[in-house]
Image (cartoon, rainbow, N blue to C red; front, side, top):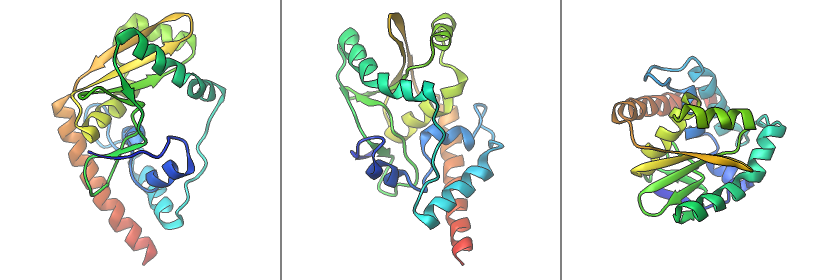
Length: 200
């Protein structure tokens, strides 16, 4: 794994992510059952545009997303306090020197783990507590982070002030990760070819 320690959210971090698929968008490449996503082509066009223009289009944010970003540091600190684990924040991780794709986990935990923090609305958080499972909404993201970093587990951590946190430890789904790796390599090759064709 190669780590770019640009602070998440900064211009430097956004530049590092420009034109490459990242784990938060792996659901646009592959479905939870390992099939190509219907959003695949549109996402490829977006990344090709970023490579050519060297700019990314503004991404949508709402009040809940903004609130979640503001609570993330508090959630990370509470996780460290209650688990005794040390979390190191990182910018962008790549699986190797080729830097074809990447992931930006919310922290590396000790020597073997990751943490992915969500600070949703109270109804969503309570839903996580009651289900006791990793929601399918983040399956590809978490498994993608495990693929990129080579780590052994990821704590998916949902935090809402004054309600107990939800934490579930996710380990690699080897069958899915193998399918994801194949799809990512195919996607990146097609993205290279498409970009060259447009530049033509």
